[in-house]
Amino acid sequence: MIRVLLADDHAIVRHGLKLLIDSQKDMEVVGEVGTGRDAVERAHALQPTVVVLDISMPELNGLEAAREIVSVAPNVAVVTLSRYSDEGYVQALIAAGARAYILKQSASTELLAAIRAVTEGRRYLDAALTDRVTGAFLARHTEVASHVQISDREGEVLRLIAIGYSNKEIAQQLALSVKTIEVHKANAMRKLDLRGRVDIVRYAVHHGWLHDT
Image (cartoon, rainbow, N blue to C red; front, side, top):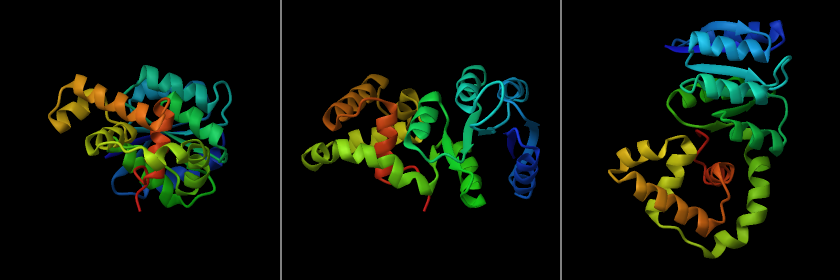
């Protein structure tokens, strides 16, 4: 059973989310909070599978709360729920450790898919965000990508990193050493001019790795 903590400062929104999630056979809401500070404290105390976290929250905003939840409850996956589709918000939340970013105006199936994806250790971005999030990435990387080729192994390593696996977990999956994984990652990032985790995620979005179709 996927245990979900809801964090939104609007009681009516929490009520709707609770009805949606509790109607799923594989999910249950184990707590509700209305502030970012309470979200951190309850995530630490309850250790839910997933926290569905609104970005606009009193006391601590969603970005600050996500950072603290990742710090105090590293096994808890953060799914951010927001009305903002700007790339800057997506980039900031991914960098803060959120595993998924879903728009409030999207269909409820997006949120349910995101919760299941992060439970399986994957990342997930709302389908409506794909073009917006990858736009800046493509503008900067189209020329590079047109003539740079990475090896199948380098691509495999990047894909697994974007989905959310650690270097150690990737090494175990591919039966390679952690050092070898680090070398493949570094080589791929250098070839593609990727500057960090956010760029890796953007690259993954462009290749359809973070959205179930």
